[in-house]
Length: 250
Ligand SMILES: CC(=O)[C@@H](O)[C@H](O)COP(=O)(O)O
Ligand SMILES: NCC(=O)COP(=O)(O)O
Image (tube, rainbow, N blue to C red; front, top):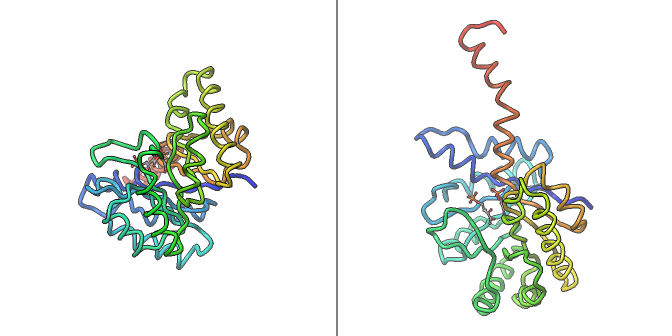
């Protein structure tokens, strides 16, 4: 089965937050994404709400429940007490636990599964007890031991951090090396009985090689590259609409 696409709305929310106005609307863009074939929506609420606001969560939950009941809501983030409470109220189908510090600009590494094993076991058990699937954000560096530790937390999935692969957009040799490391990690995860997601800096250009190396990939969550393409491919029609609004006939 091909990998499912979950559209991350953080970049849209960040654009909206530039003004005290309701556009671009994360709900409207989420609706367009799901109507166009995405299997789910992803958000990564951070404590300072610089991207997704906590108030976006019930709106997106209602969008999925009312209009796209077979779609999945994936909430990513560091499992602080506030984050866990948000998940418990919103009841996403999947929670992806990420070892982000609030001061980080974006996610840039996976969990240290030795150091945080007991903490993660408690969090995973709490979320799974409420019916949410749990995925752990992990490095895709080819090491096999962390996958057994991920399994031992009780999580059902891991999400491979693909930032180092995405960063090789201009270096094919290094991209081939990185995709092989991701593939080795995914193979071990699968052998441990974990399903495998992937995300960070994925694009239309780098996805084909990734899904070829990891044919069992369950889901990719994509925000930055997908939003960039939405702007690029939507710009011409948008300019035509604005020209017409100026009274021009085009
Ligand atoms: C967990 C993860 O990999 C992220 O890629 C993250 O969800 C992206 O969110 P931002 O774009 O807000 O940094
Ligand atoms: N989990 C990764 C994600 O949701 C999106 O990351 P990016 O495409 O914005 O880098």
